[in-house]
Length: 262
Image (cartoon, rainbow, N blue to C red; front, side, top):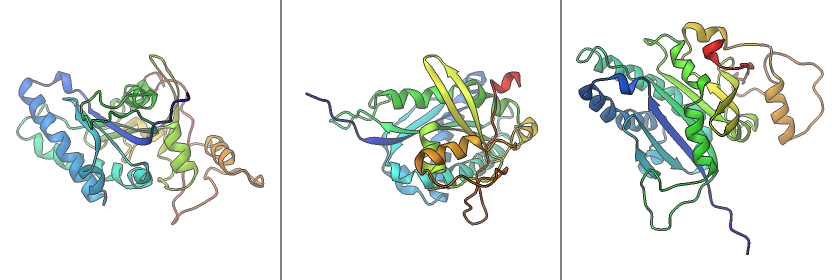
């Protein structure tokens, strides 16, 4: 008898940079702030429903994870992360006067795929299993993702996002959502057993990241779009992908190797 394919779920995981280097008191402050900033960012993005009705939500001390209906993916990609950058900057400014060593900077990973869920509605961290869940966590730990916060101004860049290959193809390449040009950069990653491509997004790039935001590398997005909806070959190749939404396009630049060595 063939097994049934589990339902597809969107998966979001975040963690905070430098959490372990904080004092016990500072860790408690940061851990308490994490769900607050996420809730506020979802609210400002017009996505309170995602936060209010999460699938298998769980805190990890230095982060948080939850699943949600994939129909919200375009809005999460195009609105939530930008709002989270702003909320993190606001909360960081409020925290530092009381604890100068505390910084509230995050990495976020977004993925989608089949997820095995327990029938009893368990909501622990181990409630959802499957390769999609593992990949979401692996992308969060990838070197190029970690390097985004290392090589940016801590007073300007508070969020680095890893979009999975599947999210990129299903949401951005399919044009259900758009992101500002020069801010989506593919990078090859290798974390434990995972090998693949991650699409890096930084709502507010700064420092060395400004060097990697643009480039004449349209092949990745063009190939992904062609695989989804093959059409007439374009007459020419430009830095910005054909297909505009309100004056905004996606542009991607290939990031070879690990940013730590770039």
